[in-house]
Every structure is written in C-alpha cells, then in structure tokens.
Length: 511
Ligand code: PLO
Image (cartoon, rainbow, N blue to C red; front, side, top):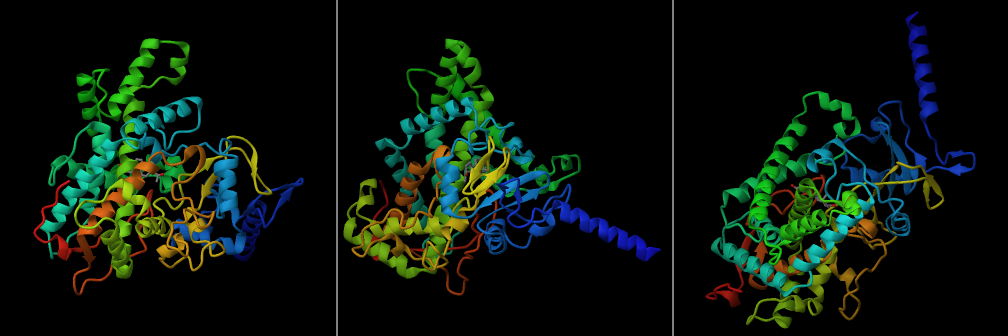
C-alpha cells in the first residue's frame, strides 16, 4: 500500500516536473523561447538555483548547460538572463524603449515610496520628464562646471590631510573615502559638508549600510510578496534604515523650502524645488500628468545621494584593494604622476588626457569589479525578442554585466587585473578594447552620474597616489578580492598604511 502511495506520488511529481519543464530549445508554434531551467508550480526554479554562489557567478556558470541566454521562474516571475554583449546591447540600446520597464518589488517600494524615484521607477512619460529634469539639474551643478573640480579637490585635500595624520598606522580607509564622496554629493544636493566625526555623517553611514544589505537582492519577500505578513529581520532593518534616511531628507527639504529664493538656486534640491513650483504655478493640464510631488523630490534626491555615495566610494575601495595587491601598478601610476604633474602642484581634471596609465587602471577596476554586476533588472513592456528568441511582455530581463566583463572570448585572461589592456602599444588609451564593456550600463537607463563619478575617481586617486604609497601592515593579509553581492558589489573591510612619499615630507596639503 505504502509502496503504491509513494509510487503514485513520485509519478505525479514526475508528471508535474515534465509539464512545467520548458526543456532545451523548446519551440511553441514556431516561437522559440530561451532555454529554461526546470521549474515547479509556485516556487518556480528556486530549487535549481541553489544559494551557494553569488548570483552573478551562478548565472555565468549556468551558461554551460543552458547557453548564454536562458530563462527561469522566480516564483511566478519569468526571468531572462543575458550573458553576452550582443544581446545586452539589443536590450539596452536597440530595443531600449521596449525593455525600459522596472519590476515593482517589496523592498524597492519601501525604499522609494512606491517608485517615486528614477532608478527603480517604471517607464512612463512622467518618468521620462522627471529623469530629464534631474539630468539638467546635475549638468547645472556638476559636470560642466569649474565649481565641481574645486569641490572634489577640497575634499581630496581634506582626505589626504587625514591620511597624513594617520601616518604609519593601519587605517580603515573606507569611512574616509566615503566621507570625501559624500561631501561632494552633499555640496551638489544640499550645499553642505560633514567634518570628521560628525554624528549626522555616522548616522548616514549606518542607515546606508542597512539599506545596501537588504534592498533589491531578490530576497524571498521580493519573490513572494505575501511573505511580508511574517516577521522578517531584513525587512525590519530596511524599514528602520529608510525611516532614518527619510528623516534626514525631510529635514533638508524643510530647510530648503524655508530658505528658497528662485533667483538664487544654490544646489540640486533648490533646482528641483524651482521646477516643482513653476509647474504648480503653470497649473496646466500637462502639469497634472508630470507634476512633481514632495515625495518625488525627496526620493529623487535620495536616489542621487544613495547612488552618488555608494557606487563611487565602492569603486574607490576596489581601486585601493587592487593597488595593494599590485604594487607594480601603483608604482607605475606614481611614476606617471611624477612625470606629468610633478610635485609643485596638485592634479587637475585637465591632467586626465595625459595620465593614460591611471585612466587605464580605473577602467580596469570598473571591468574586473563592476559596481553593479547585474545592473537593475529591466522589464519587457510588450512582447518582443532578443536575438532569435521570443520574449513575452512582463519578462524581467537581467543583464549579467559580470559575464560581459569576464567573457573569455572578448577578454584575454579576464580574471587577471591588467590595466595594459586599456592601452595601445604606444601607451595611448583605448576607451573600450572590447564591445563587451558597459560599466555604467547603456541606453535610456544609463547611469546619470557617469561623468561625475569619473571625475571623482580620477581626482581622488591621483591626489592620494601623488602623495602616498599604500601598503598593508606587516603581517596583515591582503584585502579580499571576492566582495559581497548586494545592490552594489561591496568590498570587505581591510586596513591600509598610507606612507607619505619622500617629496611631500614637510609640505602642508592645501588646495
Ligand atoms: C544605496 C543605499 C542608499 O541608502 C539608497 C540607494 C539609492 C539609490 C541606489 C543605491 C542605494 C545603490 C546603487 C544604485 C542606486 C540607484 C542606481 C545605482 C542601485 C540602494 C545602481 C548601481 O544602479
């Protein structure tokens, strides 16, 4: 009897699996869907994804069995994973508008008050308008101005001063790098800065860590929203962290509203306020559709702030970690700096065109450890295709940037850190030696802060390396290069000794 029952169960399960198994190169009525991992009702392919490997690595390894474009089900969501640059560019550029959607998830909805921001909000005319507005505000206060170079240099000087105060003793550089980057974004958004030890800066670091650790990780609540009814530690951390962030944003917003004067726009928050007020005054029908609520302004600034701080500081941390592993690269950058900038002045943005090796090193850091190894998922807004495969409306399309940057058909020995791959035989820069390189994404949703980030990374690293040689303390292990997957690829903590170079002894660091 028992044998019969077990036999029946096994048979039923077998049938179910076969039924839901979209096997290799399945074609339905001439339509060809991507290869699919086996999936079960309700849970989808979860059992086949395992959780030993970080997702970007797991998605690379699944290519062996399923090819470079494959699909699976996460709960009820149909996911498509893109692992090569031709398909990635089709999604991001050629069919950018078709794939410009974003999924709604429990955690990103908490972060963005139901998608009132830019990065996680779905595609719509309102979103397009909103993004354009922020882009022009960023241009006004960032990219195009001399002011931004001054601001970054001021922060670089302050950071170098801290490093020299810690001469010869091991220091966790992460908070210093983060504060420098935070102050640049603070200057842009709020026209303020934080000094070392400021409790508000500490609070900001704490909540940001809470958010990075818990948001948009495809955790179970994002797959099965009904799980929210159960107690959930991560969700509690996220909610607390978001509440702390919102309190701070709200305070800045209130101060800006009170001091607002449309003649003197001092920062990005003022610029957004001005746009909001002028739309309200126009009071036309269009402004109903494209109007900016307080929530939109707050969440937009939250995005710029979060993206501006977490991404750039992460790249800088990765850069320092690699420089410690490759002292010969560090030495070459310093030789270039000594020859092209010297010791009489500090580095300027205009030096970028002469410091090829430093620029190549930055490009290589962005290749080998992309900040956002899976980008943010895209959603198909209508039935479409990628390559020869049919992609149904609402499919969630994940671009595995890690796979693009580690594709051994495109990169020689992709696991090796080698800035020279971004230089030609005469030492001149090659901007992209392979089309399989998209550190800032591409298309309609390309990173808004690319230009600003590149300026900051260049200036901070050139200031540091002009003055200091970075080493690990004797007996200390070199930093871990694996990182921790999350909404950004985080760097594990490590300590550094920043040794002031000979030429700088007895010289004060000022801008
Ligand atoms: C970082 C933590 C902040 O507290 C909130 C925040 C806002 C915008 C997010 C950012 C976090 C992480 C990096 C993101 C950015 C928007 C675009 C950027 C996701 C969560 C990337 C890499 O796409």
